[in-house]
Length: 316
Image 1 (cartoon, rainbow, N blue to C red):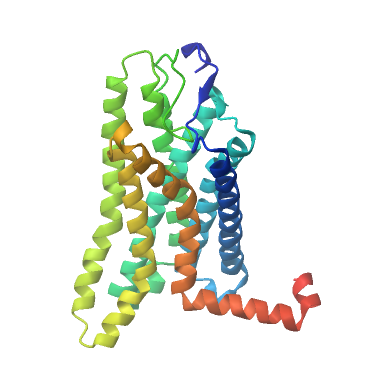
Image 2 (cartoon, rainbow, N blue to C red):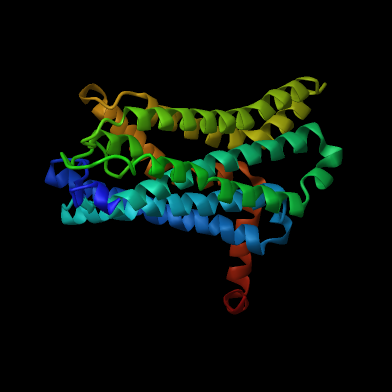
């Protein structure tokens, strides 16, 4: 990319021009980021150390927590630095790396959510075959496919930039680097590159979307055949957390990538982008923690053991 551009830095969009507002935003987003790292790390720790959580559902949830923690760490620390130092400039190389990682983690989350949908489908629609269909070998292969196949999306997207020249203006309408905004600062016509991006993005997102929501069509049909209302409620309750996370994810993505990024929608895009990059990584563990009795029980048990035997808990 070095020989393809004459600009050395990119100026990101400030979240506010008011100095008092900036201080408030810095404290707010710092607390959000610290809570995100802590809550997701706590879920990973419980999923690894608690024997009764060694199930496919919490194996996927632990991967989702690690993904959310990593995704937030790509954008939040750089945003916090910009808010504290009032320095919204980023080198062009750092911008490309950030764009690659943001795209990678977003793709990985979409694929992982589809894997979790399949897990819920097998648990509700084929419970007698659950242990066979969702063995540890199968779950490991599914997660390995998620993390490896997610590289395809940012690799293709980054290759779309190789034929473009970037010579200014170097201002983008976002507080982190994303591919559509890089197209806007290109000096060459990005139409063909944009079409490639549109086709590839549409195909991959459609596959992930269908793989995520189609199992729920089968789940709803199976639940409606359950005779008792208690049985229906219990079956739906196992899907509520995942379905909530999936809905928030796709709604925020829709606002970011399908709502025009014009002056009329600047505030809306700001809100959607902050929700997608900062708030959702915190919401995911909170939603699962509040809805999962097993997680709450594991946390209460861990806190109880620490109070009774602090020395033993420390050595462990």
